[in-house]
Image (cartoon, rainbow, N blue to C red; front, side, top):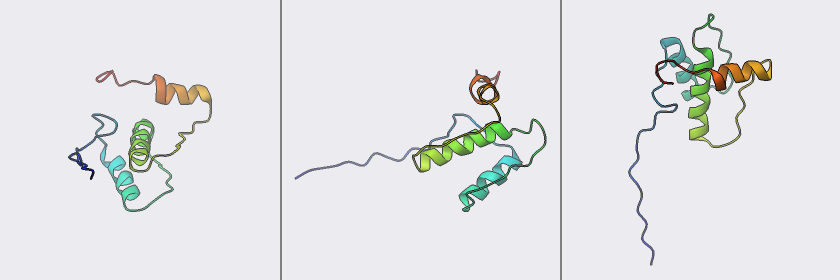
Length: 90
């Protein structure tokens, strides 16, 4: 006889502390409504990179797998998603 205990479900915010802008929330809602391919056509510095990183994180949490975030060059990708840091959060 084996006994198993199911842990309580906790709310997870991925990435930690990310708050989407209204236009990003609309895109995330479209993803949750079933959209699997999107083109985010927002103005410059509207948070496309951080929003897509958050959306990719949520998708990977819901369904583990291999995900790619693509930029025109390796340097640009590194600059946008690895080296870029929010001064408020570090």
